[in-house]
Amino acid sequence: MGKKTIWLLMVGVLGAYYLYTPLPDNIDEPWRVTWQVVPVKIDRFDVHEFPFQANFIELLGLYNFMDIIKILLHVKEVPPISDENITVTDTTFNHIPVRVYVPKKQSKALRRGIFYIHGGAWTFESAASQNNDLFSRWTADRLDAVVVSPNYRLLPKYHFPIQFEDVYNSLKWFLRKEVLAKYGVNPERIGLVGSSSGGNLAAAVVQKILDDPESKFKPKIQSLFYPALQILDMDTPSYQENSNFLPFRRLIARLRSEYLSIDRSLEKTIFSNQIVPVESSHLLKFVNWSSLLPKRFIKGHVYNNRTYGSSELLKKYPDLLDVRVSPLLADDKKLRSLPQTYIVTCQHDIFRDDGLMYVTRLQNAGVSVTHNHIENGIHGLLSLSGLKITHEMKNQYLSWLRENL
Ligand SMILES: *[C@@H]1O[C@H](CO)[C@@H](O)[C@H](O)[C@H]1NC(C)=O
Ligand SMILES: *[C@@H]1O[C@H](CO)[C@@H](O)[C@H](O)[C@H]1NC(C)=O
Ligand SMILES: *[C@@H]1O[C@H](CO)[C@@H](O)[C@H](O)[C@H]1NC(C)=O
Image 1 (cartoon, rainbow, N blue to C red):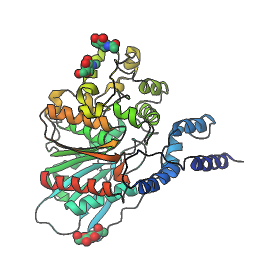
Image 2: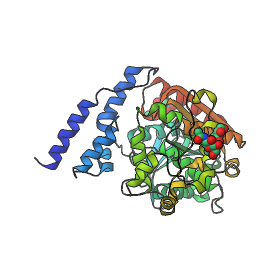
Image 3: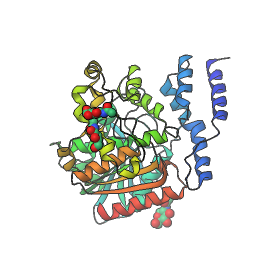
Image 4: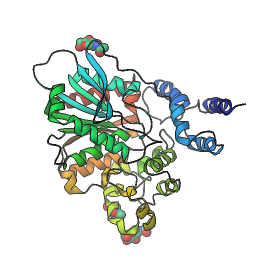
C-alpha cells in the first residue's frame, strides 16, 4: 500500500469514529447543528482527540500536522462570480490578494466600506471559502457597502507576523484616498470586521493603525465575532467549560505555537499557561478573568495564581507577549483611542471570556461598546449557515452597522 492509501484508510476510520458529536446541552435546533458539525468533523475540522490523532499520523512521517488538518478541512472555495446585485473581483492591494464586492446599483452618495478578515486559525479558509464569500456578498448587498476581504498568507508555511502584516498592509492600501475614491467609498464610514482568528487580527490591526501617521483615514468602527484575544491564559472559565467542544483547547495550543514558531516546545508552555516570566507579571492584570469577567460567568471557578515562565524562553520568543498576538495586552491609554466596537460572544465557546474581558476593558476605558452575547451560541456561528441563531446574529449585526457606520 502506498502512503496515500494508508492515509485514506486512516481518515475513513477516524471519520467513522467521530460520527458521534458531543454538543453543549441547551443548544437550539440540536439536530441541525449536529447535521452541520458532523461533516465539519469528518472532512473539515478538528475533533475531540483530533490533535492526538494528527500527531500520530505526523509521527508516522506521512504528513505534517498542519497539512493533515488542512486536508481534513477541505474548505470549499468559490470563484469570484458576480451575481445580479454584486460585482465580485479578485485583485491585489499592495501585492496582497483581496476579494472585492461592489454593489451594482448606482449610488449617488459614497458608500460604506467594510474590511472583512476571515477566520480559520491563521491556517484554514480564505476570502474565497464558501462561508466567507457568502457573508461578504450578503454584507455588500444588505448594507449597500463595498466589502474587501484580504487573502493573507497562512500557516503552516507562513508564521507571525506575516498574517498580521498582510492584513495591515492591505488595509492601509484600501484606506488610501485614491483607492477609496476608485471604489466610491466614504472615508468616514469604514468598518473593520473579523471573526475568530480574523477577530484577533482585526483587534490587533486597529490598535496599530490609529497611530500610523501614514494612514490618514481610520476605521470608524470595529466588529469582532467571537474573537481570540490572548494566549496568556488557557484556563479561563470558558476554556475550562468548553475544552471538549470545537475548537478544543489542545488543538488551539498547537495552532498557537505554530503561529509563533516552528519550535514544538512552545506548545506545552502555552498549554500550561507558562509564558509570562515574573518580570512581566504586570501584564497578567490585562487578562485577569477574576477581575474582568462579570460574576455570572465566573460561577464556581477559582482564579489560581499563575506559574511564572522562563525569562530565557521569552528572550528567545518575544512574540509570546506581543500585543499583536494578544490584543488584550494593550494598555488603557491605547484602548481609550479605539473606535466604537461591536463584540459577539458565544456561551459555549472557548474564546467567550477573551471577548468578555475585552468588553469590560474597553468599557472601562470609555469606548462605546455594543455587546451581543449569544446564550446558546457555539464557536464559528457565521459558518453554520441555516441556523436560526446565525440568522438572528447576522441581522442584529446588520442593524447595528446601519445605525452606527
Ligand atoms: C438582489 O436584490 C434583490 C432586491 O433586494 C433581492 O430580492 C435578491 O435576493 C438579491 N439577489 C441576491 C443573489 O442576493
Ligand atoms: C486578579 O484579580 C483578583 C480579583 O480582583 C485579584 O485578587 C488578584 O490579585 C489578581 N491577580 C493578578 C495577577 O492580577
Ligand atoms: C497569590 O499571589 C498573591 C500575591 O502575589 C498572594 O498574596 C496570595 O497569597 C497567592 N495566593 C495563593 C493561593 O497562592
